[in-house]
Image (cartoon, helix red, strand yellow):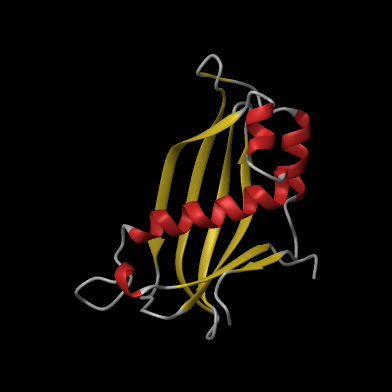
Amino acid sequence: MTNQPFRFRFRVRYGECDAQSVVFNARYADYVDISVNEYIRTLFGDYQNLLDQDLDIQVVSLTVNYRAPARFDDVLEARIKAGRIGNTSFTLHLEFYRYAEERLVAEADITYVLIQPSRMTKTAVPSSIRELLEVGAPGVLVSHAGE
């Protein structure tokens, strides 16, 4: 089980689809956000834990590559693992699969810079956070899909 990345399942809602009856491309930014929120919660606990350390994260880059369509009521599974962890930033790699078929529908890379909110300046990634990102949450599954 430890070979598996962190996984988050959710169901595509009707309002997330476009006139072609597939998930509208801009919705994938939302999917990345909700998936990463679950990942961050799993790694760091309540988001307030970061803020209590005068730390926060801000998106500096988001790239999405589409591989296959997703449709209303599909259950998607986001699989997340850390990419590059730099001095003040880190990248997460996400793969979205249609759960029932194990079909890759999209991939995304999102890069965050770590900031100190009290000063609104970037700051070094502390070793405690670096270690959590390096280990990740292998084998953890969070599901909102009701499957």
